[in-house]
Image 1: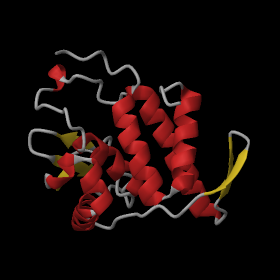
Image 2 (image 1 turned 30 degrees about the vertical axis):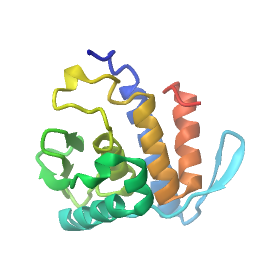
Image 3 (image 1 turned 60 degrees about the vertical axis):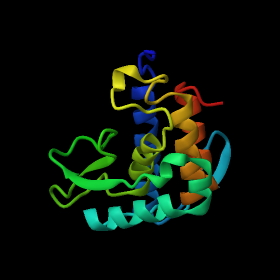
Length: 177
């Protein structure tokens, strides 16, 4: 069964970038209160990571959470974290259950943060994800992915972060209700 084109991918990435920028700005100016869609929200603290090993430890802990294991069968499949060449993207490799994350470049590690790692974990938790991406039943960034991603963000970072991400995705037309 072939899936449709991953037509919402760019909207998901743009929305996620906007939310990451909101968190960065909150950290920089020391004020965590933001206005989103007419609501004042206090952003929780987003975890940052210092190394591949600390990302691995975080992923192991998330996959070990009881509610995560109950909800998604694939949480029982261990994920390996590795450094990725280049600095433009993190990605998930379904054939080896690996998240590849760019390391520090010029003093920054934009991908060593919870929002990025939870995005990649949402790909890992896809119960229908075969090794051949062209044979997926659903687009990689479709409604099922967004449900997993928003659930992880809301439950792990906090409901405020989930609200901000959901509102941003909705405003961008990424298919979130």
